Amino acid sequence: MTQDFSLCSNSQVLANNEAHLWVIHQRSSYDDAIYEACSAIVSAQEKQRILEFRSDKRKRQYLLSRGALRHILSYYQPETHPRDIALSINEFGKPIFYETSNPIRFNLSHSNDTIIVGVSYGCDIGVDIEYIRKERSFSEIEKAYFHPKECAEIRHNGYDADEMRRRFYKVWTLKEAFYKVHGKGVTISPSDFYFERQHETYNIILKDEQEDASVYASSLQFWQTYFDTDYSIAVALDKTKRNLQATETNEQLKVTLKTFALDTMLV
Image (cartoon, rainbow, N blue to C red):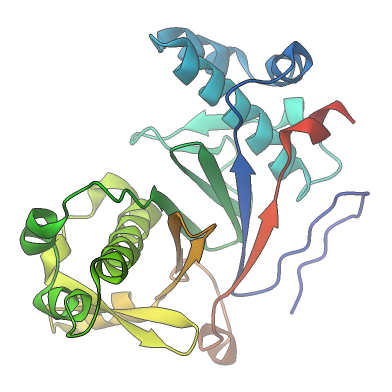
């Protein structure tokens, strides 16, 4: 079933159990016109937030990410200009729509010079991107925060150092997406759950065998991939707040990768 949106040249349509994952590459510098285009559509609150950053790099990154976010969200409500999209910040610092009844859900993440924006319809969404750093040691993090099954899977006999590192970042981004879909209020320890692959997606397996935990886990679906060989990205979708038919809750999560070029804001 597809949701009914009015159409414009860049309008986007989301189906049930689908997430759009927008990838935005940031160059080290842009023409002044790009920054001016972003500044013209961000809110006074966002401009105040920009002033709180100490480095010019972080100021530019934040401005570009918020400008891109507003353009992307306007694709799902094409009757609204990007500057007129009313956004707020929840108690965990996460950007949300001011009108909480808006069925569109979104989440952002960035690493190195790449930003991702995940968008879904009616389901809370969490996304994470991590740059795969070859010089980083992950053994202590793995031992402290990963489930024993995940540690065993990473260090499977025959994997070379590069493959173990890729698998570490796969688990890391899946866990981060899980925490981001619910905000900082989740108290489950990262070593108390692991992920089990099912076709093209992942299910979460909680150590707690109580009925409430099982029902909670069954409402979540996860997806992970590698991007440009240097990044791991993951998506979490929570269906607990949707009034879906039984057949719809069993549908596999479909993730569509899309790219957003900041230069398009000048068109």
